[in-house]
Image 1 (cartoon, rainbow, N blue to C red):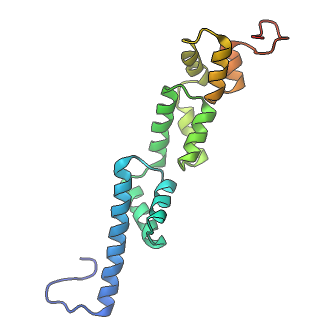
Image 2 (spheres, helix red, strand yellow):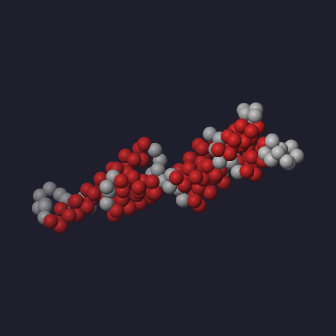
Image 3 (cartoon, helix red, strand yellow):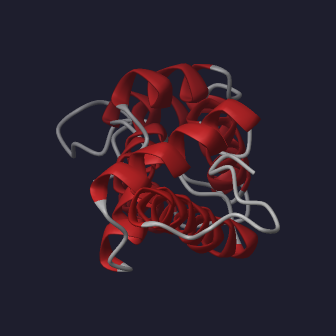
Length: 167
């Protein structure tokens, strides 16, 4: 319809060019929708997928902009959902921030999403309660991206020389 295509209209070169342009845009939207059907993606990740699929830059930008405007692509919503999921599985703020960055979420949006989570101390306490050996708890929480201050608040100092240390 945007091309003015109707029954009885002669297909001349300018009309065919417009028609091809619209088909390219439609193909880009189809590829993008197929990618989003599997799982939510950040704006950057979706652009990367479209680029790998060979979608032209102009069509790629238009498709992503249309999906952002429609609310199908929302970095803030994705960041909040992913941060909550990772926090629920016992990950610390640093690990969550790294994971969100890896998914193409801008740092400012990731910071806001992490700020909405329960405190890191609360999450570390929950994650370490089932582990009787304090050293193992310390190791696990370190690997899961919890801050040193959080570990010390939850488990106590690790330094042998400090009073009450784990060493």
